[in-house]
Length: 308
Image (cartoon, helix red, strand yellow):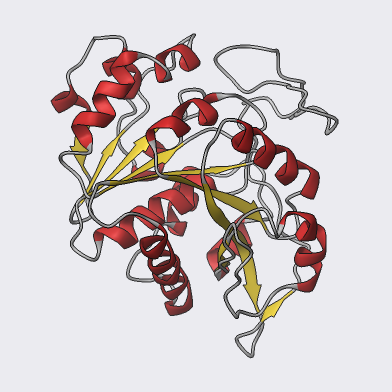
C-alpha cells in the first residue's frame, strides 16, 4: 500500500491489526505496498535456522504466484511516480530491525524493474551481514568493500546476474570499519560512475536502528523504502527509525508491509504466525558482543537493545 509523506493513501484493503500497531507512523511516510506471502514463504516462517537454498525460493521465478508478481509490479509503478524521470534513480531498501525481509524485497524489486528493459544494479551495502551474494548464489568477493579500500576496480566488482538487464555488486570481504568505508570519497566516486551506466540503482543497507550505515549511505540516493514485517514490526522501532532518517535529512519514500497473508477470497487476513528469519549473528543462544563487524547489541532511544 502507498501512503506518501503528505498523507495521501491509495485505496487498498488494510489489515486492521497492523494498522493499529503502526497508526502513529501513518502520517510520517507513505505506505508503498502490501507484499503478500506465498506458500513457500509461510513454510519458511516456521524455521529459525533457514537454509539459503530454501530462502532463494522467495526470489521471483516462473513458479512465483501471480498475485505476488503483481504486488511487485504495483510497487514498481508507485516508485516510478515518486522518483525523478530524467536521471539515474537511486533507492535504499532497508528496515528498522533485522529479519524483516529487506534483502529479499530489494532483489525482487530490482528484478521487477529489470523486466521493463531498464538497466538495473543492486548493491549490497550491508558490509556487516551481507545477504545478496547468498541469495544470488554467487561469491561475496570481490565486492564493494574491496573497491572502497582500493584492492579492486569498478569493472572487477560489477557483475551480471542470471536476470536480463540486472547486475550486482556484492558486499565483498567484511571490513572492520564499514561506516568509514561507506562515507569515504571512494564511495562517492563509485556512485557517480555507476549512475552514468544504469537507470536504477538499489542499495541494500543494514537495519536503521542497529547501526548508522543507512544514514551514511542516504546522502547518495533519491529516497528510502522501509520494509515492515506484518504483525511483527513494532511501532516504536518504526518511529525511532524514521526519526533517525528525518534528522539526517533523508527522504523516506514509504514502506512495504511484508508477509501479508491472503485469504481464500483473495483478501487479506491476520496472521500471527510470521516469525523472524534467522538473526544476523551465528549463535542464537548468546548475546552478541559489541563489535564493528556485526550488529551485536545496540541501544537506541528508549526502545531497548537488539539481542539474538
